Length: 83
Image (cartoon, rainbow, N blue to C red; front, top):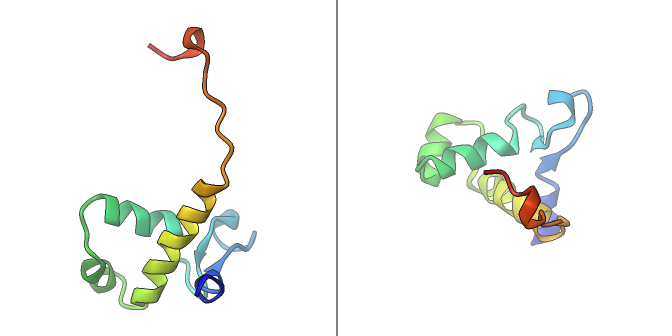
């Protein structure tokens, strides 16, 4: 399943400066995440972007999860924490 989702995400320096997009579109992954975070459900995302599929939205979530899973986090020391 992951391999199928991975194929739906494209990273190309000639498209949106290399930001990850849904393959074959100029719809960035971050836009889908932003809409979901703003309260859109999948059906509303699909209505707003009729060229997308349910699997495209799932692929955007999968991609974000994969990026976060393997991201290295370096906590700030207490003195470096912004006020």
